[in-house]
Image (cartoon, rainbow over all chains, first blue to last red; front, side, top):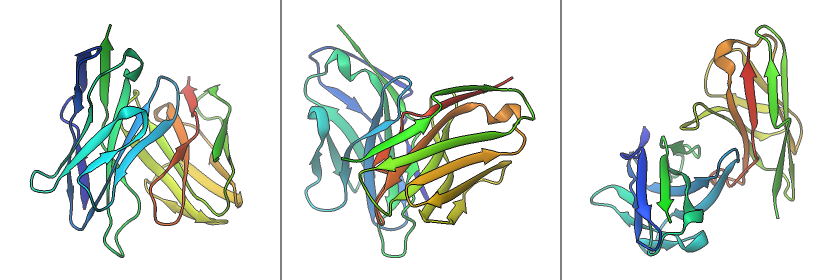
Length: 116
Length: 112
């Protein structure tokens, strides 16, 4: 079984400040982890993924995420937030073990609001 | 690059009417295709996925069905819509054993 928790429904941050959107996961095999962003009335856009290797993953639009195996977390970060980063962010996980399901499970999403 | 087209963007239907939502993919071949429903602007519920023509897996039993008549065409249907079918429907594509990589802009379905 696999699951994702995004403990914050909403994150507020001032423009120019660093931002963190939290994600914790549970999976029986090797975790493959993903972040997506959704702007209003649009589909999701893929931001970044962790499969293996360096725990710090860099993605689109200046975002990065840090994989922490001991804490089973994959928090999304950005050093300096922009107003245009305001959107809904989804974390997803799937079991990367051979024979595992390749269908990811999505979290409920976190609304990021960046204030000018 | 890969593009997903969904139409219509918005649809208002009466209870009990039929439904057909279409999704087509450009810029790739033999993709995995997915139908998701997003309720209240939040979590995604996987409805169907397909790894090839005529191959459909259903994740949630309900009055919806899906078909894949061509490699890059994925259709979501219903014979009789329920009020609970309202939501934002998203089509997505991916490759091999990878995750959904590309999403369409969705269809917002309202049932009256």
